[in-house]
Image (tube, rainbow, N blue to C red; front, side, top):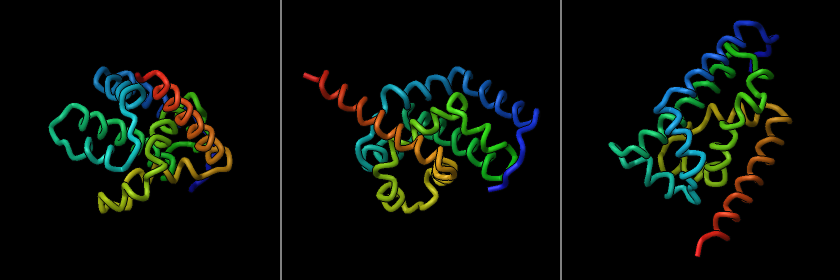
Length: 153
């Protein structure tokens, strides 16, 4: 991964990415990923991924595509990695990736696509800090699932 010093251009790109996150449909998609979509298995994910024409399928692809695109900017050196990895910028990316990470290998195998979440994974695993952040986020996901399970009758 190319290393470069953060520049005003990097900040501008990140602000534009932030503005895109405020677009109404992307907001709905992000909310769905963050609060409604809690896949426990590769099959849970595949059920939505193959339900073409549904709102949930569109949201799944929209958010995954958004973060995959943003990660590609880092991998190509177009955006400074250190700046991008600030939690205020990419915390949500870690959250969605942590939701699929436990079954990512199976998901790739079942979809016959070794690149599913590939750019995101490369960025998430690119530094010690980001690998630690993934572990932190995995624990938060597990705690959230425990709380939701405890609330169910």
